[in-house]
Image 1 (cartoon, rainbow, N blue to C red):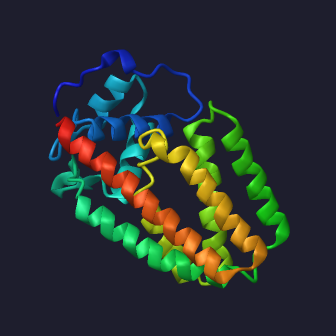
Image 2: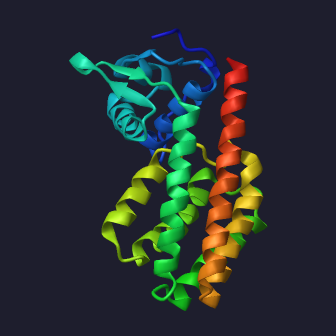
Length: 227
């Protein structure tokens, strides 16, 4: 494992969610090149660096493995994986195919209360400049999760959830240009659901994922340029 820099960013307990913070910090270290592909990740050294116990680090590494950012090799060694641009684009292409299907299936089942609740939450995000990453992620998960769940196809919903997990580390903190456009796109999706307009809903979610893909692609290109 390389010697970690930026020690001034070490976290100090207590925190409300150490595993979440460990996850975010390790992702940042991977994306900014502090932990290049192939780097060995040792729980004890990471815990010492982040000034936390090994348990939240272990939880963070498990989540990163599920997201495909780290790999567990023989002997239980954990190493940083390679972020493959082509794979990310493929994942988002499949998401577009599945989520456009899910939103059409969900249209007759999503009720007005659920739509109004999400519209209120999105409007709250848009009205505040100091929204936390966790708060934004929560609303994003609720919207996409509602559509997937209301498709009433458990297999479809699970695949969508799994694919979203593989790209969610590209949050609005790492792709800040997507914050306001993404929220506007969410409102367009909700408006189409409210009108029970299947074509508009499919078009809105397809465009939303395409714009997300472009944001991630630009971030990956910057990552490549920074290394």
